[in-house]
Length: 629
Image (cartoon, rainbow, N blue to C red; front, side, top):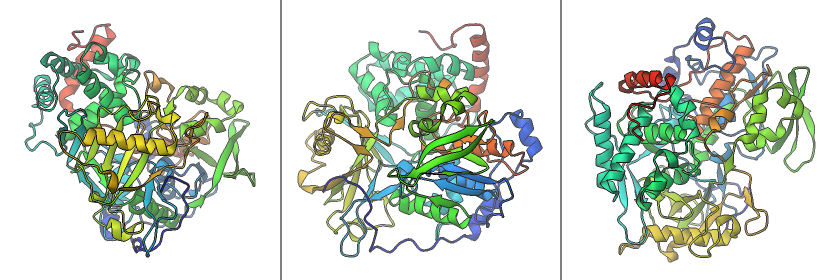
């Protein structure tokens, strides 16, 4: 059983019951406190696209208000950013139509049926582009998830999240694996007690316990983190955005262990970008600080959230399908199987959008009062003509934004094989392999009873992030391999990391099938293609990311490439950008409607005095206090 196109209808296992609006959910939505338009303008300085500190309308489950004249919005793209924008707009009484390329909503987050695999009243095996996870520092997306009703859940689909308790950093050649606990520290420092020396001690203790780094290298890395933690915003944007993570931590001068664990493992494996080019601002601020450091200390989290969370069922079942149902109840319309060809521009405004059926047939022009582009950047920028680009120069700068491949393979196994209660990071794998055993988290599902032909009992979801380095079986890059060769190579790299030190975690006889996103085509040929790529973050990326509001008064941008506070290609960034786009639209529409609340990354108050010192030093051209070279 190989990867292929989707389209086999689900059958068998009982679907989730019809969505209901719970009293608790309505009360949660009503608890949001709004902000008047005047206060919004004061906070935002009147700039289109500025961040508002207001919150979303409630109640989320209330019927959509009848749209007034001039309040029709065309949302181009039905991924996370497009659905997030449609949600916020519909709650505010706008008539929204979403145009989506695929036949299912959700973009890269959607689930797909593996064709021909369901029998005996079961659903087809579930396939996905790659596993979805929801770090605890996500706060905008979880707010939206709480406002999507789900039967039996007071907190909507948010209650379908499950926390992982441990991450496995697997090593090959018999080297000991690192099991990293993901529960918050049981004893947290009192407010104000977090000092640079305390943080340095904590970082050193983790590195000493979990790695074989030489003491001087561990100490140097801890000191570099202190530099970033105490750097002011201006230094981060002016200096560290231009410096690669590799150079910032001086990986080129350190041991292979240092390079693998603290360089490659934190960039290529997690966000599909290379440490040699990845922006220090992005890596340090989001991955090291928000995800790891403050997450484990329980600071700036989504309520009592775990550091690492996944859904309790395939993504579309647990989240996207209920979302679609809720949005339809709010009056949102969806036009699926539609390709956006060109955003039409004349006389200072967008006048329409030229679209066609996905196969190129039935071309037509759709119109609205406002247009919100929510497609991935590699597809969005192809729809912007010369006149539109001339109207706002930031659109042209998007051509400099870079994407890369980060695509998953689902392995279906006869034997439950959870490996670890969380994610797996195969640090030494040449293809930067990560994965997770999914069935252990699907507590509302019995895998063999509900999916496939009853033979598969687990799904090991694995992602390839490095497509340009030779593998261990064929000596070829992933791009040069056929799909079957990629599967064999990937399985071999997994076993190389998990089946050493006398243990056998993965057995060939347990593997009964696999699935790869059909968006990847032409593998093994001269021109492999991937329609679903990932934005990466080389140095200088920040300067080319556009704002959600544009110089065209009825045209707005959402997507994980848009400038947001989270500054990383994530579902959180997609959701935050949608909130900013809706706020910009409301401002352009001169609306008195409450703005969307935008929650920014946590800023530890203990670091603020040191950042103010650094701000002065930066203005004087001096290095950070802790930057000793």
